[in-house]
Figure 1 (cartoon, rainbow, N blue to C red):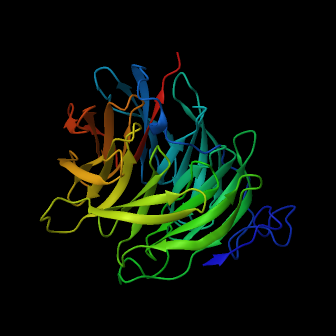
Figure 2 (figure 1 turned 120 degrees about the vertical axis):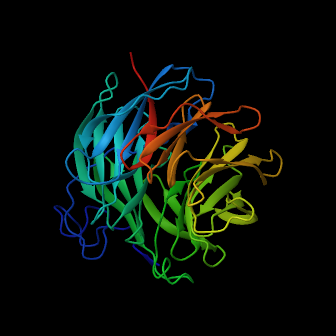
Length: 404
C-alpha cells in the first residue's frame, strides 16, 4: 500500500498553484475544481417522518443520449411508485448520494477514466442542473461518501485500487485533494483478485477513522482521519484480513456505533465486527451466508443496509436475485436469518429505505426495473407491493422529500 503523507496538500500534480508535493495519483493531471458537498444517505432520516410525496431519483448506468438520471414520485402512505421521467444526461452514473441540504446530488461516473459529477437540485420540482465534474484518481469510481462534518468527500476507485479525499468548497464544488492512497497486493481468486479493488469508504461515527473494504486483497483498511485538514494516515494495525477469496465490498456502522457489518461480494457473506472506537480496530465475531441454504450456482452480493432503528440488516444477492433479511440481536449484535425474498427481477444491485423506513425500493439492473417492498415493523420481513416499475439499467436510487 503506497501512502501519500499529509504535507503539501493542493491540486494534483500539474494543476495551478500546486506545491511540488501536492496530493494526486502518480502521473495525475490538473483537475478542474468541481464537485460539491457529497452526501449522507437519507436512510438515516427519522423513521417516524411522514411526508406523503417523495421524489425518487434513479441513475441509468450507461452512457449516451438520453441516458443519465430520471425522477419518480413515491407515496409513503400507499407505497405507489410512479414511472420515472428522464431528467438529465450523465456519464455512467453508478453509486450516488443526495446531500443533507437536499439541494445537491453527487454521483460516481464509473466509465473510464472514472470521475465524480455534481448537480444542483431544484427542491420543488426535483430538476437537476450540472455543477461540475472531476477526475477521481482511478478508473471505475464506485463509491462516494461525506465525512461527518460534511466538509470532505471520500471516494473509492474500484479499477484504480485507490482512495481519495477532496475538500468541499462553500459553493458546493469540490476543491483540492487532501489525501490519496494507492493499495497494492492481490488475493486468491485468479479472475477477480489479481490486483486491489477499493470498493467503498466510510468514516466512523466520531469522524476519527475511515474504513475501506478492498475486494481485490481481502482486507478492510483502517485510516486515521483528521477533519481539520482532510488528511489520512494508516492506523495501527493498518487493516484487518478477511478469509481468502471473500471479496469485501460495502461496510456499515450500526446506529449504536459499537458494531460494524461488512458484505463480501465474492463469498456472498456478511461479517460482523466489534468496533473499538478508541483504537480504531475491528474484531470479527460472526460470518453468515447471505445466500439460501443449499444454493447452487453463481451469485455475488451487492448492497447492504441497516434499518435506522438498528433491528434488522438487509443484503442483496445478484444471481440468486434475492434480498436477505437478518435480525440483529440487541445485546450481542449477532445476525439471525429471517428470510430470503425474490427481488422481483434480475441482478438486484442497490436498494434503499424511504424516509419513513416502512418501504424499500430495490433496483434490478438485469431486468430494467424497480420494485417496492413493504417492511414489516416487527418482523423485518419484506412484502412486494405493486407491479415492478420500468427503469433503464438502474444501479442506484435515492429518496428526497418534496418541498412545497
